[in-house]
Length: 271
Image: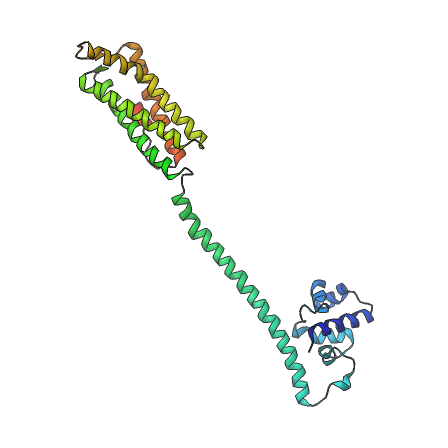
């Protein structure tokens, strides 16, 4: 039983009745593409279509399966009949198994994709909540700690009426320098992150502008024997500006870096 020959036979009989593939398909309630595949020997008609197909073409099922009008070549004994039917069932079985394998493959593919979407993507989102490198995140952790330590120290100075003693002076020197150094390292690690890079530079600038001059004046005063340094009105204004702006910059960087932690802007703005 030759599938290609059967296809040629179906095409020949269809054409002899002046039927198009589309008209034959409409009578069999299938697509014209299905008829085209039969005639090209790509696949066989389903077993349940053999009877209506034979009636439309005016031939027997045996003639279709043998691809021949010479019925004498088909012996009528039961063994030959069984062979013909068995051949049809075998071809139909191959087509059915092929379709089942195709469906199984598609189903498996869908399950794999769904598993990836449901299982893997949330994990990826969890561990890739920040688009910045691990080095950049570590640099921000150090910078964040330095900024908070600086804000705590400035709050202490503010609570003392903007008076700076010798201990506070040393702490101010160390904390200002540490925060600026850490922010510079962080800026260097985020060259490709325009938003974070800009915020980091802004934080470093406001610390330098607000506390740099105060730090210098305090060091000069203590070198001249002053026990406590009282900040001037302009220096007090600079400290207030730092406490208003720096916490918000810190929170904005936190948000951009994907750090989930309570904001500090409201805390320090109220102190």
